[in-house]
Amino acid sequence: MAEVLLFHHAQGLTRGVHAFAEELRQAGHTVHTPDLFDGRTFPSIPEGLAYIEGIGFDEMRERGVRIADDLPFDLVYAGFSFGVLPTQKLAQTRPGARGALLFHSCLPISGTWAFGPWPDGVPVEIHGMDNDPIFVGEGDIDAAREIVEKAKDAALFLYPGDQHYFADSSLPSYDAGAAALLTRRVLEFLNRV
Image 1 (spheres, rainbow, N blue to C red):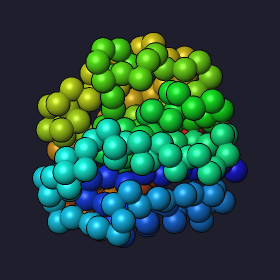
Image 2 (tube, rainbow, N blue to C red; image 1 turned 120 degrees about the horizontal axis):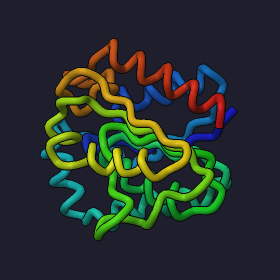
Image 3 (cartoon, rainbow, N blue to C red; image 1 turned 90 degrees about the vertical axis):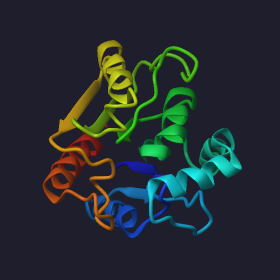
Image 4 (cartoon, rainbow, N blue to C red; image 1 turned 120 degrees about the vertical axis):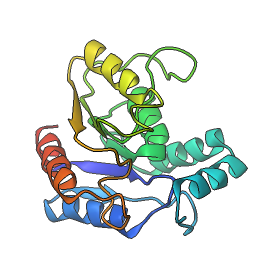
């Protein structure tokens, strides 16, 4: 069974993120769900992003990275949207990563936002909706395609729809069918890494 460090999105550690983590636990995996917002949740993405900007994106990312200091090295790192920032940095720079799961977001592996190339031996899956104005419209899909092209064990899964947080059951953007398929794929990934 895998040990997973799962980071929440810009609306915070919602009931839906907890529910997703619990599904993984029910399948026998250990899942850590740190709260980078100290108990705060936000009713919208812009409000959550405003909170992050008030503290600083770099500082918020590093909060997540520091959480891993107290955990083993052989983790699967997972993150929803904003949570992809610490997820990707840890998967790409911390030794021993067993894998990475990037939901609704993806950072490039070249250019100014990059942490460097994707590391050999670290499998990765990227999940997003094919008409999500953030994932597709802001270029995350291009970053995902670059990873899939260059990494040895990488997959991009696109789901029909235009919702960003489609896997969070506590939000109006939730898509039960897409979320069920994402969860099935994630469990298959965790069982093989």
